[in-house]
Amino acid sequence: MKKIVASLSFIVALRFFGLFLVMPLLSVYAASKSGSNLFLIGLVVGGYAFSQLLFQLPFGVLSDKIGRKALTAIGLIIFAAGSLICAFSNDIYMLIFGRFLQGAGAISSVVTAMIADFTTEEKRSKAMAMMGGSIAMSFAAAILVGPYIGGHYGVDMLFLITAALAIGALVYLLLFIPEPPRIHHAFDGEAPKFAELFTDSNLVKMYVNMFFHGFLLTIAFMIIPLELTTKFGWAKDELWQVYIPALAFGFVFMTLAAILGEKYNKIRQIFVASIFINTVAFFLFGLAGSSIVFVVASVLFFIGFNMLEPLLQSTVSKYAKASQRGSALGVFTTFQYLGVFLGGVIGGAILHYMDLTSLSLVLTFVSFLWLLYMLKMQNPVKAAFLYLNISMLDEATIVGLKELNGILDTYINKTENVLVIKYQKESLSDEYLKGFLKYKDESEEE
Image (cartoon, rainbow, N blue to C red; front, top):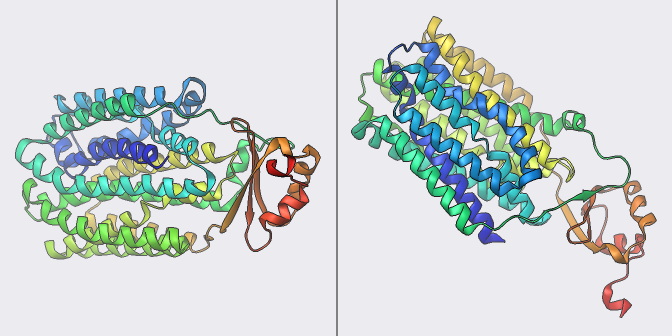
């Protein structure tokens, strides 16, 4: 099980490494294309997120019908094709089309659902954290080597590498990843409605969090290379001097955040600290009169970004019920790409009419409002899980479970014929639940 999760995380890491590889120099690359302006540059930076926004939920729905592995393969092929178009683009419009096609390979929620299919409830959060950590690591590695390769061999080479990585991930998927099990959930009473995903305050906070996370990240990727190369006169192959400190500090804080969040359940505190650091970073961007202050602000921003990466998907999976997990992750990812897309478009439009100082003040205010909103976030409840053979149970007693205080979720895994009970440790115990259900172990039957 752990090997499969690691393999899927590796595939996700390869794809995101290719995606992040071009980001440090993407705005500079777009600016070099004929017909470019600041608005169209913003569309290039955030364009892939718009098609992700459109295709994320359809990919998730189709994966339930024709299989997650098949949809993941299709998504990787589309992503590789878009990368090749970006590499050989002659003008800004061809580049925009390539970026939109890259995003149409919307496999994030599909791979997340595949990981959920392969894991049990207790191990799912760790699996999601492993995937989030792989994304953070790929981000850190990409921002380190991307400026060097792009500065020496051109940004078009980065897109060719991105296409090659996607094809490599496809081959690995087909050769080493088995078909995930078909898992179905059965519930007593009426199944939860899609609208309920927007009535859970904790889930809604995660959607808002992911929107601003993507929104501000995209704008940061626009302003950092543009300002360093235009305002402070840096060459493209000198940008590593920003990204190496970002890599080092980001990795340290990412590791600390993962430990504090997952092991000690300090998720709310990590989220608040991350947003506060980003608020300070955007404030310093506006005040930066020298490249040193600007580099410090950039490093602070990447520290805040990396702190959240290993915790995002795992936190959503903790808040969502089993019947809602796939949909919740789909909505969550949709909000992420909505933020990325609007960040590129709005950021480019604002820069077209305002200077960096004015933009930074606006972003500082937005980030501060985000911070105030997330102060009300609650840490996920520490839960225990009980697995019982459904054939040893009376159906009438299962229905009565929902009346017990401390029951967080119940569902039946029809594939394995198992009832899964998620409950609060402080309120209930395995022994009490077995007694309530009049459960008899198979050994007792013999």
